[in-house]
Every structure is written in structure tokens, then in C-alpha cells.
Image 1 (tube, rainbow, N blue to C red):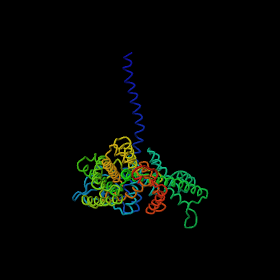
Image 2: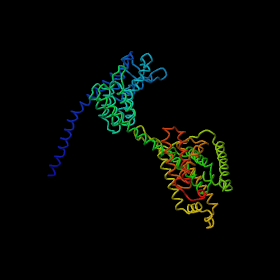
Image 3: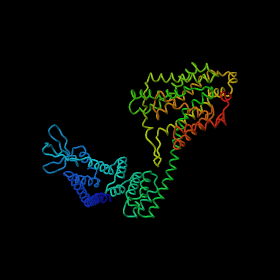
Image 4: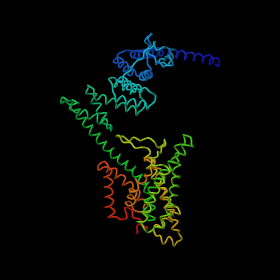
Length: 560
């Protein structure tokens, strides 16, 4: 029995091997024949470039694009660079690179070396500006066969933007072989936009049906052009029923774009609100607990931004390139410490002598703000300083309808909420937070219970200033770092604090996001400047009814 198995196994392998050979014999000739046909078509199209007539050259370039063979890219790029030549001996198209007095020849298809030639042996194939423009479009078409999805998507967009007579067939071939869902959807949209102008009403009707589900403003403009009239008074879209369908599609897209517009205003309002929240949260602490109108609060933000710049330069000079993006994380504690240290110096050196005299405090802190601005100008100069966005917070997120939000603003919204949550937990659960709340509610009683109110004032001012420094880290990612950075936010910060309620964290959150959203919804109607004026008037009227803001908090400032 074992002998039988030993003889059967080799026979099975022989049979299987014979079957495979037979299949290869059937398949290989067909593939070889197809490859030979492709090579012949490519060589014929390349030979069409070696002529005098620019019209014939243009036809050859278009033919190369319609072949869809990525090997033509090298020849077309060489033509635009002035490196494509025709060899006089046999009219073969070659790439020639000059080396002293001779030219080294290369096959544009295989890349194989073809020897050397003198200047009399070859003739340059010339391209004019019009032909170069056509070549750029064809290079975009050839990128449809690229293995890189990004290049294929860019190629689809180029073909749609600058279509030729063969673009529709080209897009259909690309659609049939495309595996990426997003690129395939883009191809379907491109095919529909080209079929919108077809003579066949069935194709136009199907195109309108597909495009009606989109939310791209460019598609809406394309559909609207079908509703216009020609110079002779006839409509671009001659069929009445289809023209009505086009109008319905335009109305549907307009409705969706209006919703996307509202979403865009809401998103940017939340983004602005997060910036205002970071700028105002430290001011809410110092104003609520100490009753100090700190006009130098904006300069604490500015110091945090410049600290970010310094940390960035240290990382750039000392750390490897792959670790550069972590400078932003290191900047957060550094900015807090720098701004908090300046806060303690301002409170101990100036503000503690002016408690109970708000007007003098305002003037004194305004003078401090001017001193800090000039100090920064003396050290860093008056010009703006660039703070780079790390790779992990760069780019944008597309929502649709032409609406996109930058990644750094999304991070700032999250960062602002994290800072507020950490601050609320610190005030609620730490010993210093308990002392700070006690001083806020009843300074005299807190002092009689052994709380050192002067120390609480200094540390509270340091805490508020440190948070302002952290706000400067975030603002450095979306704004220019300059000595005047803080001045852009000081007025809005006071409005947020007064509107939300002095000393109230919840009030600051609601006030910041509320004012940010209202500002963004008013800007398209009234403009940026008038919108701020309207918001200020609304706050003044609101304060007349509720002097303590949205969330009233008992404390020295409120009782005063």
C-alpha cells in the first residue's frame, strides 16, 4: 500500500503541473499580444510628437492622454522641459541630456540608455505655450492610473475642471477600475457633470438626478447655467420638464447649503467662544475674588504666547526633528509658570497697595500693561513672531457644502473645556480652592478663621495670570504673536465676565460661548465692527436688568 502511494503522488504533481502549463499557454499569448499592442500604440503616439505642425503635436499629446499609459508621463515632462528630441537617423523620439559637447540619449518609454549623439544628429521637439497647457491637462489625466490615491483624486478634479473630447470616456474607464469609495464617488460626479451637456436627454436626466443629491456650490452653479438663456433667446436646457427638474435640484441644494451655512456659523461661533473662554477665565477669577480691574490681563496672554515661541526655538535648536511637535505640550506648563510669576510680582509690587480703589487699580494695571509691552518689544522686537503648528494639529476637516474647520481650532475647543474642567476641580476639591471660595464669600470671616487673605490674594492673582498664559499658548496657534496680542482680547474678556456673572465659572463658560456664537451670526448681516457694537449694546441693556450677570455670585465684587 505504501508503494502505491509513493508512485501516485508524483503522478498527481505531474498532472497538476501539466494543467498549469496548459493554462499559461492559453493566457500568456493573449497577455503578450495585448502588451505588444499597447507598446505599439504608445510608440506611434510618441512618434506623432516629432513633426513640425503644432496641430499634429497637439493631436499626439491628446492621444497619449487617451491611452492612459503612465509611461508617457516621462516623455511629456521632458517635452515641457525642452529635453525631448528626434534622432535624425531613424526619427526615433529620445530624451537627450547635454554633457559638455555630446548628448546622452535615453529611451522615454523603457528608460534604457541609447548611447551618445552630437548636436547635428538630433533635433529638438519644440512646444509652445498652448501645447504646454494641453500637456499639463494630459499629465493630470495620466495621473488617473497612479497608485497614489491623492494623485488620482487630484487628477479627477483636473479632468473635471478642464475637460476634453475624450474626458468622458476617460473618467468612465477610471471609474470601472477604481477601488477607493471616495474617489469613485468623485468620478461619478464628474461623469454626471460632463453628461449634463450631452445631446441624449436620457443622459441629461440621469445626470440631473445624480447631481441633485450633492451639496457642492460648484455643482449648483453648473445646474444654474442650464437654466440660463442663449443669445438667441432659447434656454440652454431645451426640455421644459427637465428644466423644471433642474430648478428643483437647485432649490434642494440651496436648502442644504443654507443648513451648512448655519452649521458653519455655529462651528466658528463655538471656536470663537473657546478663544474668549480661555482669555476670560483667568480674569473671572481675579475680578471675582479680588475685585481688581486688571488691564494687564491681556499682557499675561501675550507673555504665554512669547513663552511658546521661546520653547519652540529651544526645541528647534536642541531636539531632533521628529520630536519638534512636542514643543507645544512643553509650552503649557512653561507659559503657566512664567505668567503666574509675573502675576505675583504685579500683585505684590502694585495691586496690594490699591485694594478698595478700583479706579486707581485700573490706571495702575494699564501702566503695567504698557511696561510689559515695551519690555517684550525690547527683547523680541516689534515684528510678529511665527509659531509653527505641529503636524498633529495641522490640516482641516471637511464637513461638506464647502464648510471645513481647521484641526487646530478643534483642539483649542477641547483644550479650553479641559482647562475649565481642571480649574473647576481644583477650586472645588483643593485646600487652596476652599480658602479662595471662603475669601470670596466673606473676607472678614475667612480672616478671623485663620486664613491668610493676603496670601490667597497673591496666589489667586497668580492662578488667574497663569491660566491667561496658558490661553496664550492656544492663541499662538491661530494668531500672530506680537506685543499687542493681548489688547485684542481684553475688552471681549471683560464683556464675557460681566455678562456671565462676576466670579462665576459657569457664567464665564455660557458668556464666552454665547457671545462667540452671537458675534458669528451677526457678522454676515451687520459686519464685524457693527456686530461688536450691537453685542455691546445688548450687554449694556442686559446689565440694566441683571446687574450681577447671568449667574450671580456673592463675593466682595458682587456685594460692592
